[in-house]
Figure 1 (cartoon, rainbow, N blue to C red):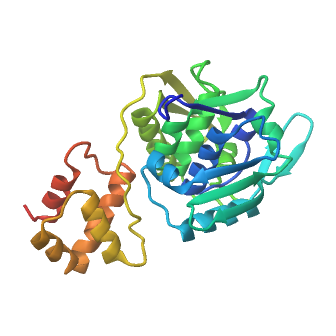
Figure 2 (figure 1 turned 180 degrees about the vertical axis):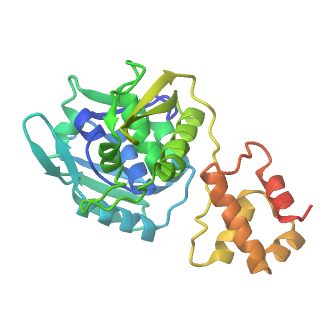
Figure 3 (figure 1 turned 120 degrees about the vertical axis):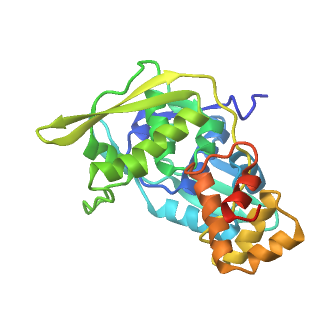
Length: 304
């Protein structure tokens, strides 16, 4: 049986370049679903184990988060542009949560199936484990885009505005989350390049080109590499409504369990906020700590 680390998943290039906006969790559900696809499954119903998803992603999700994620996925469309037509496609016909089993049963829509199964050519393949371990939703999309062109060593030059639409940075009303190129670099491109080059089988960079005085074109340069080892800790979201509870769980995951230290941290709203912020920065790679993350946190808090 193929390992998670080496398992490749595929979908049509039209899906790779489609316009859709998914959150990090929704991207994880989509990619994990792709790994479960079997053409002989005529009913098109696939089951995802919540426990297995948490294990492979290193992220714990509760049922409220999962149900909101699949509900929102059901209301969003893939905007697919081909040479012959423009299509709006919905992913699921139905989603069912099996009580007490930790299983999500998803039934694919008939319209999406050809883009997932009829892949004689014009398909994108990429590593499931790498895609799931990326923490930025933009990195996940850019990884799949670069995977489409990995045999060519670079993507074609594309309009920055079109890349933004593919990533959901520009919405259907034309609102742009990152109007300045410096914002796009900081929040999308640089984070994606760092995560993809550190945690996947690809090492990428990007080149921007101007038209007149403004940057309007981009291409990604791609090199293959051995996949790097992953940080396999499931951290809690620092925006949890119960910040103290999230802090306590994060301390446990970082192996900070000494009762006096835990009590001191939980008694201080400032320290609780700093712990949760540290964990968030660790997940998004603003903080580097591949070995003793707990020790680094205590040093940051001034407790050692």
